[in-house]
Image 1 (tube, rainbow, N blue to C red):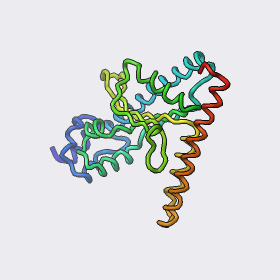
Image 2: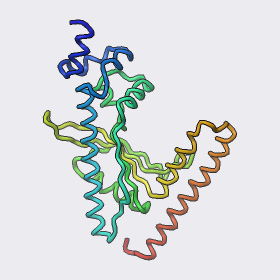
Image 3: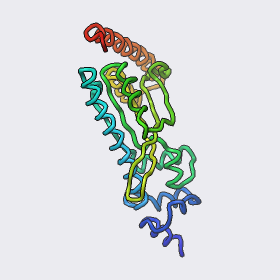
Image 4: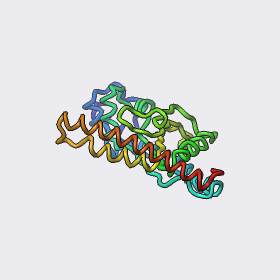
Length: 236
């Protein structure tokens, strides 16, 4: 069978995905696109995992809203990386070129961002979420108590969640970010400002210092709002 025939059969899902592992990058790009059956199946798995995790947070929001007389979650944002973005990351990390390698080594393809009103809610929601017996915690990074040098604050979790397909149960990685409104506001603006291509090195340095000050002020705002809530609803 010719290489062209191999690629055509792979694209139709006839040849197993692990056939790709000895490809070079050009061949890999030629074999994979958004319409390739294995790629569509892989991306669908991540979308299903997003549905599963998003539903869990929505249920927690409803239940805890009753218990604490107010919904702790303000909003939930979800995304699944595009195939192009995934392949670029494979290339940057110099990973083996196969779907199996992607599924094992790139753990932020499916992403959920949970925005809470208060810092206390972030940790409360995370605790209840991780206590569920079908959630497996793989990695936890607490950038709230240990902010990044630039001032970034958020709670990051890498988890595995089961999805159930026509082929059976499959464990899928999902990245979960939990943060307050203030943290999300700062992170969103920091991303927009830092990646302006017109900035000089001097401007970037000055901007970094100003953003660090803004991050401290956002953290202080979170603390003050937490205090106000504790005065209004002391049993919280």
